[in-house]
Length: 232
Image 1: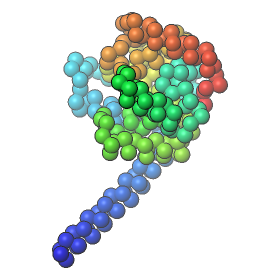
Image 2: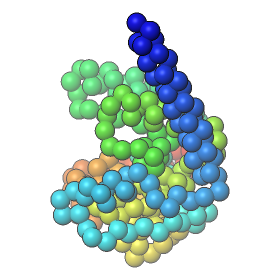
Image 3: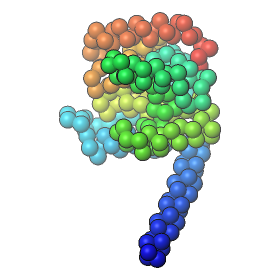
């Protein structure tokens, strides 16, 4: 009995130490994003370590400062991925409830991740749907909203998100598909890039499908309705 109590006490101390360490490390990592552009990130590393079939040998990425990213592109991803981005604090609870309702009714599975959640996932985490990963994602999302401003979160998102196999960030995507800097993306080009973000391995910027054509038109319509007021 005594040995059991000793073991439990030891285990609790270890858990407490791990919790404190995780808290401090996560705070430092997120705080550093105010001054440092991430040299690498979880999603990119996962692709390099366990590449999908026919994954390109060369990875394209070039960081672009937020002041040089076209407002058309910023508005396109907000229209496509998270229309309340400038207003919420990292979580869109109405979208979560709507997604749960749709999924429960057997309709096509819908996601409800905000841009901040997607940024936390792409930057720090691994693919998967476990409760542990979701819990860590929620914590990191809250930290990012607390410690970074919306413009910086959007800048990081646009520089990390994958627009096609091995094509990370909006500058690499703009150069690859349109042969120009993301600073000069127009509405049509921005909407087309944003249209593939649900799954850039299934949908392709340079191969028009019924989905990407319709999705691009929908995003352009949303952009007109949102206008510049949706930008942080």
